[in-house]
Amino acid sequence: MTIALLYILTDWYIDHAELSALDALPPDAKRAWVSINNGEIPAPSDLAALAPLYPTLEEATEASPVEGVLGFGFLLIVFTSGIGVVLAYRLVAPLTRLTAAAEKIRQGDFQVTVEPGATKEVETLAITINRMASELLALETRLKFNTRAVAHELRTPLTVLQGNLQGMTDGVIPVSEAQLRALLAQTRGMSRLVDQLNTLSLAGTIDFVTATMATDLALHASETVTLFQISAGGDVNFRTYLAPAPAMIDPDRFRQAILALLENARRYAGNFGPIDVHTGVDGTGRSFISVQDKGPGLPDYAQHSSFDMFWRSERLSGRGTSGSGLGLTIVKAIAEGHNARLEVGNNPDGGAYAKVTFEVA
Image (cartoon, rainbow, N blue to C red; front, top):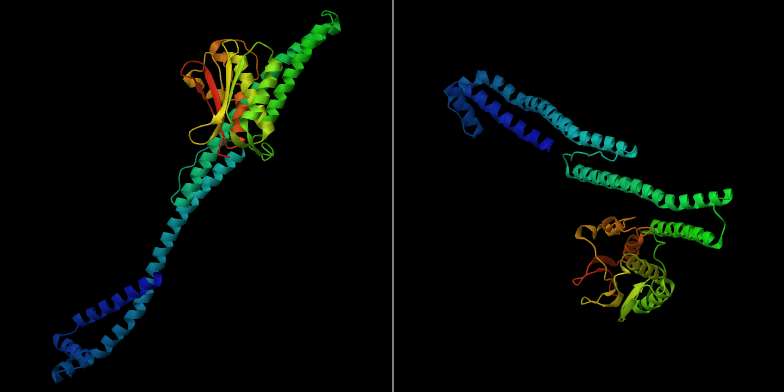
């Protein structure tokens, strides 16, 4: 590009120098020069006028290419160098900002933002870094909240255990079978919380959903509901409407999800009427399982919060129902591990529902 531009400018300069030299000639000498260039024989008087000026004119035309190359070459070098400096600055300045932002992120400052750069590639990189910083900030906030929530969940049963054991040691509280059973129940609650947290820690890893097989959701739902009904006693009435629902699932994780849904429904709506369990295939050919209750349901703003770790509906109703608040979080993780979709909402005739829809087997 630079060489082509230099050639064009030099050629223009040669033509311009030649025309300037001709314009400086007397009219008769100019006519003689034009005649010679056109291959004609000039008039003797015109040729006589050109003869003493010809050496000077020839030197001027021969020097023009050298002057053009040197002059315009120097100007082009200065011009292209200036463009290079500007482009380098426009490229280096955003990279410097990106480097500084990456260093802040490495140091734990996730509130950093980077202005988009001059080029598309730098702009894409800046957007990626900003998105990464935003996600890391959200993750850090969530981690701090979950850590405080775990501490809160363990503090109460540990306080109960410590107080009772201290009282038994001091002889203030009599040691009885009933008291020991109550303390054992506290340890089971903490163990269940630890197991649930361990389940969530595996979510998204290759070890979370394994050994999938083609099976019928109705079969596993029937077995799990029967076992849960026995363990829950006669306090809750479970009704099953189980149609064939073929799907590729990890049976152990699927049963874990069903148990979490049943426990969630029993805990928050068991006193309001029967709990219905449905399996089948929807209009799109996807298999599903749903658990529906007759309870007070969920406010619209809480239907997404119910997936959050340690969320409980008693925060809305004021009830002191116990529980870890991890039930639907675990179900959502298991559903995502199966490429399935968890949906919660309210039934038109009252009560809430939770539905897991699987891809076509």
